[in-house]
Length: 404
Image 1 (cartoon, one colour):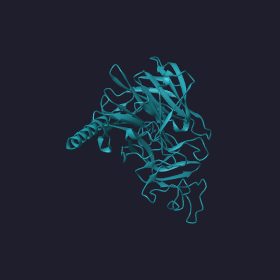
Image 2 (cartoon, rainbow, N blue to C red; image 1 turned 180 degrees about the vertical axis):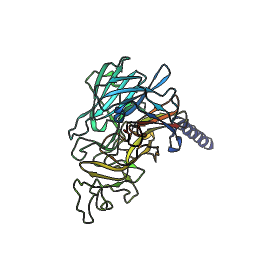
Image 3 (cartoon, rainbow, N blue to C red; image 1 turned 135 degrees about the horizontal axis):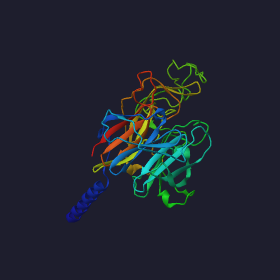
Image 4 (cartoon, rainbow, N blue to C red; image 1 turned 135 degrees about the vertical axis):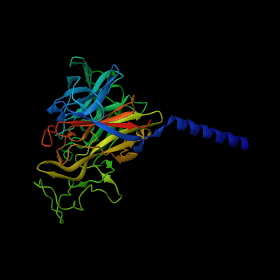
């Protein structure tokens, strides 16, 4: 009997040891260390760039960002130290398939660019899609292919794609966040969203491929955040009797109306996404020798968040680091990150922001495995050109070391 018990216990210890070896620890906010930034400025169009991916060309790290007109720009940071200015475009391409909100990913394994995109100002439900292409050396693109994702709305998949943290899928796509007319339709996710897919390059052009929901903010639910916003969007911009201000010309002066929806913190101490909160192109799967995690940077309202003169207004913007344990990305309705932490980054722009646009937000991240560095970018976030009254056309590329 004792021998059987000892044998059973030994088997359990071995099983637990094997399980531990198969499941690396999950990344935590303390594993991320901000190092500094490089200014990025090419011309006035720099203000309207968004998204971030990278590729290696003969050992040189090249970054990719997209303008609002669908022009992909490539630049290198070789020879530019932290605090320096990147001012040279190494290549550019006119990219098919870009819309109001777009996410990009360069698949180094196949030397292919992927783009996901969505029309912003529409209440129509359109199918999510991925357009893939080969970038030519002379600004041309070739081998263009588009596939649709079965049963998925494009307003939930405008953030981009990444290598899959789960072995049964080739890639994951999505990210989620606010889009215009969110209360009128279109299927946006007011929080995180992710689907897993097989390799779309194996499907025919125009095909519809299966998409497995891994992470979602269903119905009228919302994503969680660490910092506390003052939400006036959901009936909060009202007087003490609950009479709402309809499209006012001035910012609110009273506290948010207590009977309004989605006030933060709620009775359980939870803080909620508000209009304008989005993940954009800000997600990366990170695998180090010791840890792993699916990481996203949420671009969020800071302070008062309200509707005025027919658009969104904010006291300011901030960003948070959200981390999910990849082994938990199977429930389909899992919205709560395993960890959330405000990510404080130096911004050259001071003052207010308005509109539902990636501008003046962190709008793209990419993880460079070779150096263990997470890069984040925002346009424009740097100091103005030609003094304090100059044009705001300087972006910032932030460097964040990930503990190995």
